[in-house]
Image (cartoon, rainbow, N blue to C red; front, side):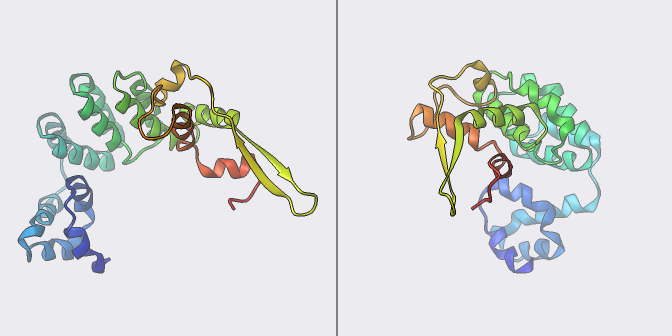
Length: 225
């Protein structure tokens, strides 16, 4: 919407800027030319002139700096998700952990069940960040193996009880595990979670944030409230 353009153009986050370029539109690009601090918005002119070719995107993905690589991958995923995924897989081993994590995150564009085999291989990555990003994407695919494993773990921890004869209230109880195995770590749940909470609380949060809330509505036969 036009009224949001000044707020959008004032954003300083470079990652957000790259993601916003395709939706600025003609008015946004014109407005960007009126303020030197919004000049980044003019980059959209080049991308609007003609569709990028796979060869051009491949070159950017291999040779450009990380922000440009991520932008190229996002563009390629919108045009041809399978080809973009294969391009990432082809050079994956040569990238650093930070780069691998950023590139895997870009696969959220055009995400589909066809991405599951590659993302499953990412769960064996030596970087905990890459494993976590891959698990987050797989959890968004409701029929994926990761989504199923997370639901199983969650159901083992969370139980319910209804109290009251007339006006029944639902009570939930959570029993975190005492320890986790390597399967949990492979699915992006770190053995030693970071943050201010305890270890077992971290395991609970790591699992439940990857389970769709709608699952619990069905599982407990209860309303969201």
